[in-house]
Length: 316
Image (cartoon, rainbow, N blue to C red):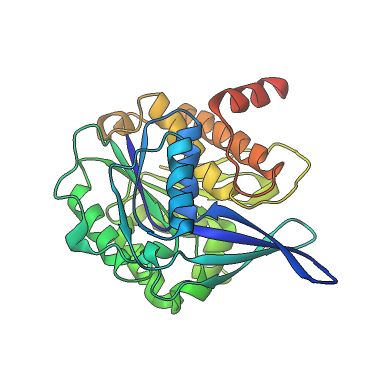
């Protein structure tokens, strides 16, 4: 089982103005939440560790997790409100976010509320985004990762949100510290640009390897993923699709990579030790296909395993 940790929120998609105001659509969101949903949709065992509000939005988020087959064993509830993220998309489909999150539920997880131990069936932990930079959940996730490193495969995605985490230097310092416990780091070229302005992707990825991960993947939108694995730099193409928007594409890529590794018995400390370049290439291609599919849909709506394999077969 893959235990995903982090925020869960409501994305409020704002449409074109009308004579009576702005049209809006509320959908479930949050980067780690999307990863958990993506893994569940792909048919791999997943659970979500976070705090959801007792409000209507919190119940909606819990129902979405259940619909995707994501275990609620590690879900907590509290009276704090659900975070709202207002999303407007550019003409090219890129999302722009504004967050409304003071004292919200998804940042309320404290270290003392962590499960005292994880069962053996939890073989991997995935965490990331602004939950790594806001308290108390940032301390809770760091405590969990430090405790479980070496016993589970740890995967991190910075998914940088400057308007939420504030001082990027402090966030970068925490992320670099957490990479010392990680096996996989998945980031976007935008994340790298925010954390290390003006630096090229490959040197940054190689530096990240020196912190401890075995696999560093940087997604680059239509250019496809770039991966540094040992001495190798692996670049794979992104499938060409008609883009509706790119919301959730990076999260779906992360979910696809973890699901592929899990399905191929490589997402355990023992299995991951045997990872080779052929495995990495196949995993990147599967993840890129899953991300391409979500780009053809409105919002973060991850595909099933069957949809991904059919999509790949049609383009073989």
